[in-house]
Amino acid sequence: MLMVSEIKQAVLDITKHYPIKKIFLFGSYADETSTEYSDAIIQVTRLVNIYGE
Image 1 (cartoon, rainbow, N blue to C red):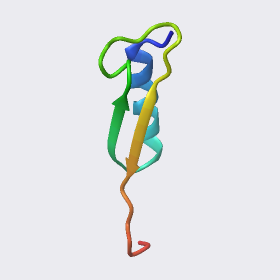
Image 2 (image 1 turned 45 degrees about the vertical axis):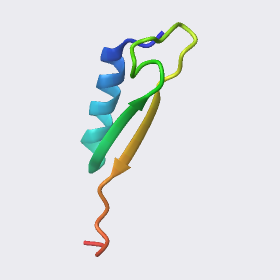
Image 3 (image 1 turned 120 degrees about the horizontal axis):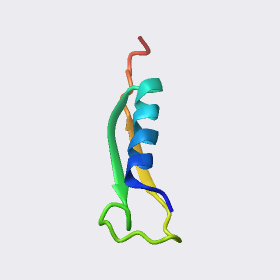
């Protein structure tokens, strides 16, 4: 089972490589009811420069 600290570290690692606007955690990890069979559902929204600069 993942620990919340492991999820946080993974999210921090992502933000080091990509311009992130928002990150959402869904499901049982988000409402703190996770079990050994739970998966972490994460939505990542990147910042995008529409002008290609």
